[in-house]
Image (cartoon, rainbow, N blue to C red; front, top):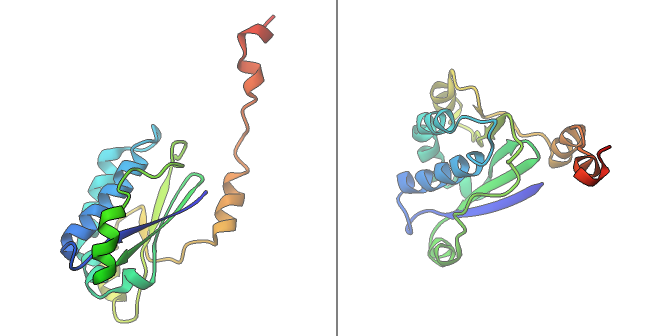
Length: 162
């Protein structure tokens, strides 16, 4: 399921505070899944901070989204700056995004603008769940997750047991 969130950046927040807001949104969203380790998620997101702050400061996340894939969830996160950031701050939704409850794995795709490949490669080296690879098309992600087994809820009805 496709979702989108916009997080206010400068001047509403510093670049570090903007990344903290994004990391918290991702961590809280993934915390809803019993199949994921919240401590591991937060630790990996903390390691991404130097690269993320550079992307936010350069305005790249205003134009290109960070994309979180977790189970059926396909979440695009962008930032906004200037007067848009001040306007957005009032209505910003920092609540966990529904859809990752059944996730057993996750990937956060970061944009990789020209001139930043070396920095991103250095910061992301050894991280299992964060990449600069382009995310698959939204329809590919949905199709892959639709192959999951379906639970027949009528079979769980005690009245149907013999």
